[in-house]
Image 1 (cartoon, rainbow, N blue to C red):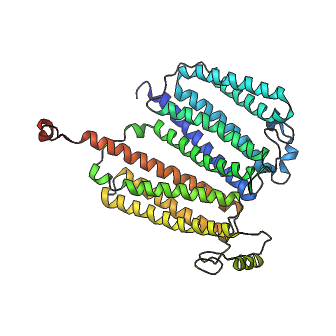
Image 2: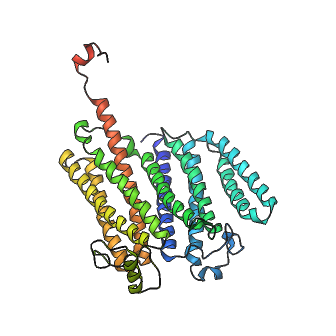
Image 3: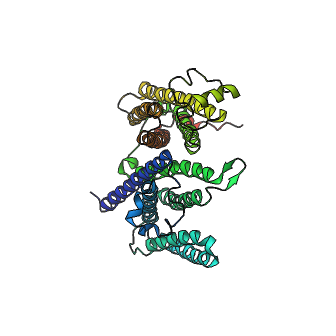
Amino acid sequence: MTMGSTPNRVRFAFAVLTAIATLGLVCLGGLVTSKGVGMSVPDWPTSFGYNMFALPIAQWFNGGVFDEHTHRLWASSVGLLVVFLARWLGGFESRKPLALIGGLEVLGGLALLSVGPDWRGAGHFLAGIGGVVLLAALVWVRNPAAEGILPRLGWAAFWLVQAQGLLGGLRVVLDKAIVGNVTLGMIFGMVHGCLGQIFFVLLGTIAVFCGAAWGRLEGGSLPRIAPLKPWLWAGGLLVVVQLLLGAAMRHQHAGLAISDFPLAYGELWPATDVDSVRRYNQLRADESIVTTFQIQLQMIHRMGAVLTFLVILTAWVKSWLLLGWGSRLVGGTTGWACLVCAQFTLGMFTVWTNKAADVATAHVAGGALLLLTGTLLILVAQKLTVSARAAAPVSPVGVFARPAVY
């Protein structure tokens, strides 16, 4: 064991803890959206006028307050973890920029508090974040910066967690503001949900990069890896598209625009003319009204699910045929294939259970894990490709031959 191994192991454990906490936050966000309780606490960053950390327990159990308020407190905890992770990855020298940023945020928050009541919420938010950043800057540990790209990824997470907090707050504050035919609250909610998935992937990637296994990853055969990479990219991009479609459906509360599966209103592809949509709404058991757009959106999501399922299974089969069972990539694609099977099943049960909150939340978590796994597989394939190229023997003919002139 080297002198530096123990601190690196602790850093890895802290990065894993932060990634797991972020996954929990994604699940809580999905639960809030699935239950439709995002506005149970109507103000921000306060909660019913209280500091969010001082809300009386008695008020936690009114309607959906418990879910929404827990989501806010969990988000604050994740923000704290991410700021200290960025400090750890950036090393001792990161104290200076953190102190500057934190000081500016505190001053900006205090300035907004003095402007007037309309800016009080933003002032409290900015001053609170600045205080956490200053606290991280005060940690007087002379640790070196992490290796490679990790410090930059830490700064990316640092800024992204603040953007996520702001988007979550704007979703509440601007809930009723209308632009065109949609509310700003819905738009900010969709962006907040999608960015949350990206944020989780970033934290998961940081955790993997902090692990010793990533540093030891090398070897591979370039002719065997290259044919697999397009399938990994295709599967990853399809997962992104599916997450975007799913977010659009959730925030329009259109997850049950079609209430049967595998058929859709008894057809392979439902008619969406005016008379048919009117008939669908008359037959619906609840009082919600669905539109042509919502029906078509869900059908596209269903077709995308089938395509994603087939592409990821193809990637798994090709990895097995190209690399054999002993390859790290085969192990990863096997996990990816299991995840997409589970995700497809959860999608079916979301419809069959009338969008039960726990099933819908598991579906959101499955999407996040699918995206993280696909991203890591692409990164592993890229690293193995670079390693294979570096290890490839140089032909003597190639060394002594005159370079071609183009």
